[in-house]
Length: 93
Image (cartoon, rainbow, N blue to C red; front, side, top):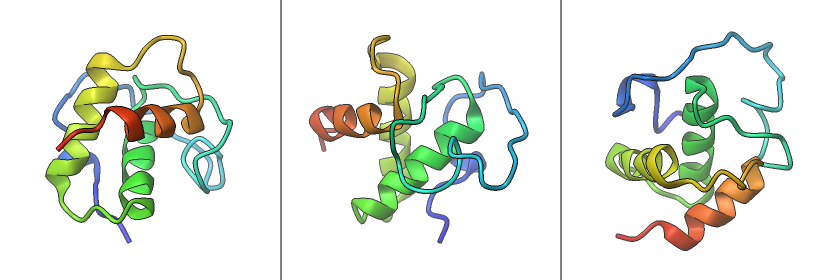
């Protein structure tokens, strides 16, 4: 189920690389895979996956996640798991 897609993104400065179907950067569960916040496909994948895991249903929640990651994610956070933990701590409603 897709809750958040490319058309929901607020920012437009992403790169759009084509990934193979089972690439861990855009498939599976968030893990130790390196996350690139400048890559649109990775941003959409991670936001969508976290919205499903955390049972968020509204695109504006995805936009809050995107804005936090895009604008405030510390440089030392590099894996999908680390982004997930950081968002869990910093996402406020």
